[in-house]
Length: 153
Image 1 (cartoon, helix red, strand yellow):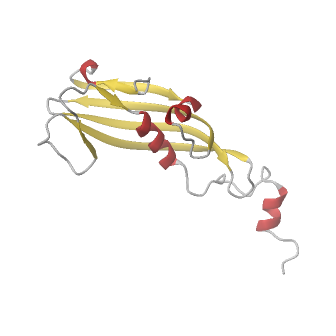
Image 2 (cartoon, rainbow, N blue to C red; image 1 turned 90 degrees about the horizontal axis):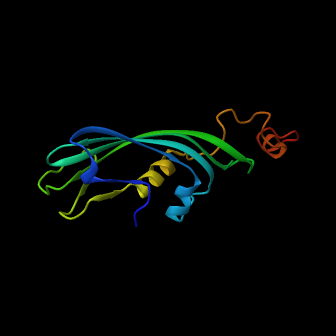
Image 3 (cartoon, one colour; image 1 turned 120 degrees about the horizontal axis):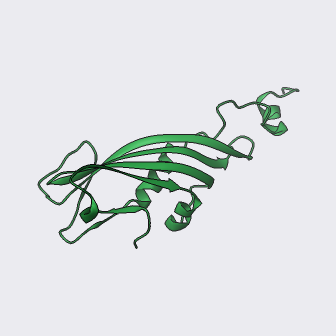
């Protein structure tokens, strides 16, 4: 399925080019999963380097996601920033072990970036979903009571 998160190989110029997308909740709807993300605003920048045997894509994503706090259950906004590289080759003999590598068939022209964007955003979310300043004034009383019990037993 073609959507706005992708590149046509035939339209990429030789050498280097840069492509950008603004990513919001529509990405989650297109993927059909949400990784418990309630909201997001992410700027995706892809630097494409097309050569005769391969296409190297350098991904840079930054922005924020809204998720439920692991401690208090309230909605929090967490910053994310990540970088990844993928290599696509139409020459099956060209291979590298340093990046994500994909062989492109002779009639393939569309590189779908939808799943890559979703995966990279999900991987950038901290495992512990709490604000860096927690506990602070924005935390609900139950978090304070749990972290600092007034009557320890």
